[in-house]
Image 1 (tube, rainbow, N blue to C red):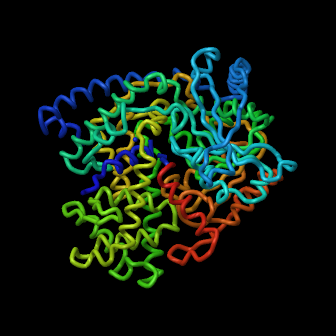
Image 2 (image 1 turned 90 degrees about the horizontal axis):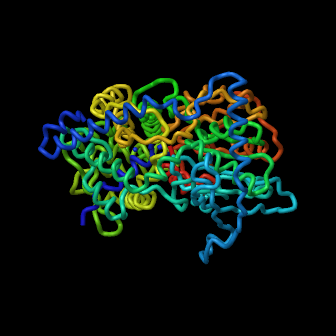
Image 3 (image 1 turned 135 degrees about the horizontal axis):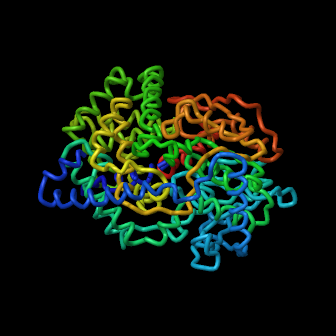
Length: 594
């Protein structure tokens, strides 16, 4: 049985709509068939509605810059919070699975609309790893792994012991929660059943490159957008990051912490900035890793290009990909399988061009096969760039794809394992609805007919990856829905305590160039550059771990413009190291965050 790329597309949207992350010509769609013409007509109507919606972007709480306006915003948020009863958290077992024995689980009800505190509620599901030394407990460390739509519960339950040092785990309850509309927290859905979602994306590539693919992709995104608005209308209209920040502040009160300690990754840095804007006096410590520019994400700087273009992920990926190729060449044939086939850059470029017309079938461990097209290969590379620990396997997989069919089976062991696990995780973490937060709060182009041109322009700046990321915002163009309680800027922040900001030099998902401007939004941000590769610092830099531990436990912040290195060099054996233990967490990052 052939495995289709349905989940690849769903995850491509989810990873950037992810962003870890982190979702043609349309004139061609109109001329492809009569059904294509009908779709294009519907798209134009939706486009007009979206233009009207974007014209109303200022309907949310967009504070004027200046201390008086900021103080008024903070007072309004404090007044909203004061009207909400603090929920009681009834912690209980997370189930019989031995792996969950250390954790506790709960759920609470929060207002769907904080302007109507006694109205409808929505469920927030949460988990915690209790502090190992209760007598020395400082408080609760709230976490967000990114997305939007990242699995906060899964992140803590699977990787808290990798992400946080023994000192942090001794003195903090590590808390993860699925944000409203995500996972176990009253999820936003776009289809009545998972089977119907699967069917809607069967045969759809991660991004289109031909007129026929463009027509099919556009119709699928339109169907998805209509499905989301039909299936979850009430949840969508209260789905903003600002409401997520309000939820987190209510949870802070519920656990009894006077001030918030928080670690946010990727999109989680946008949540952190939003919290800091709305509740600046409630901050104890913010660890912000893999920064997402609030202006780029929200479009508050007036940039009307698609969000996938604004975020510069194409450029970040292209830069990191060049590092992958250079490190492979330096490692040589013994440690990088691609280098055994020639110059890695030439080999991969020739392979990608060939895959456009001649896809490759790879047998999977479960007996099925997976068809690897050009678009699937680009998406696989993009996600694998998130973690340098995955680069050896990525090189082996690309080398297997580049092997003639007659000899491929003997060289596909690693490829089969990698692709089988990749496919499984796509199915586990797919789900369009959980990634739609940006649709109801960020600015969009209002020009779904122009996405082919946006993609072509992006590809000139960032070959292969520019187009992949340019298309991810297309569903949002067909969703004239806004959360009027979203916060849209400006992003001058007034948190007085130091905050800790990390940027990795070669990050494919949150480009390093955004790190300093993000840090400068805060009065006292201490920026740390991690010299290395991949998306975020979890489990790969003991230097970064030490700085995070000192900051969270002692409130001892490093000097601004500090530097750390990574513990692992690409294409070297993992051995029995902390990096080896971190590899599953870093692999997961590619499926759940920007």
